[in-house]
Length: 158
Image (cartoon, rainbow, N blue to C red; front, side, top):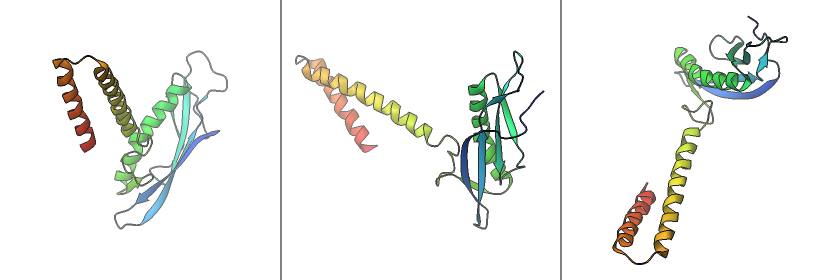
C-alpha cells in the first residue's frame, strides 16, 4: 500500500519544550503535513496525514490513514496527543507547550468547552430571571427568584 515518503506541504508546526530530570531543557519539533492521497488513487484508497516528530522518540516520518482528509487529520492529531507524552515519559522527560503539560495538541479546549457550557447555562438562567421579573407576583416567582439568587452566589464563589 502506498504511504507518503515526505512531509509534503506543511499544514502545522509546533515546538515543544522538553525538560530532563536534571532540569536541562531542549526542544522537540512537531511538523504536520497536509493530508494527501496516493497520486493515482483508486476507490477506497485511504488518505494519509503525514507528521514528523523531531527530538523525541524515533524521529521517523509517520502518517495516519483515514477515510477522507479530515478523518486522517483528526486521527493523526489524536494519535499525537497520546504519543507525545508517552515518548517523553519513556525518555525520562517532561514535555510542555506554553507552560502547560497536559494540553500539548489541543490546547485548552476542555476549559473552553466547560466555559461555553457554563455561559450557556448562565444565559438560560438570566433569561429565566428576566421572565420571572416581568411575571406577576406569585409564590412560585418568589421561590424561583430565591433559587436564582443562590445560583448567582455559587457562580460568584467559584
